[in-house]
Length: 105
Image (cartoon, rainbow, N blue to C red; front, side, top):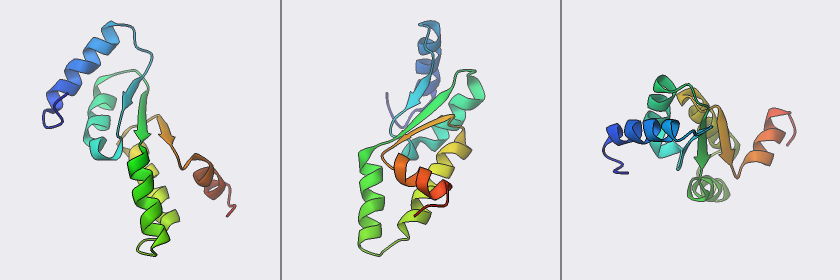
């Protein structure tokens, strides 16, 4: 798919639906928030966003270097995927985010 052409995402979505897809997956998630929203607005299928290892590593490195607040940036990155329309988020931060959401450190 050409990442500069959002119309291709709609074409792929229609093809996936006609082939009986149970879910639509957007990978990587963060650079394609607009595509997640586009799919959400045009398909009844659940939308999954995959936060790939590069996105995870970027946040971890920034946190390790004290350039960012790792927990805040992690949670904001997950929130923006959800806000864009993702029903499911696949992330390497799953355990860390769950602990944060439960009030654990």
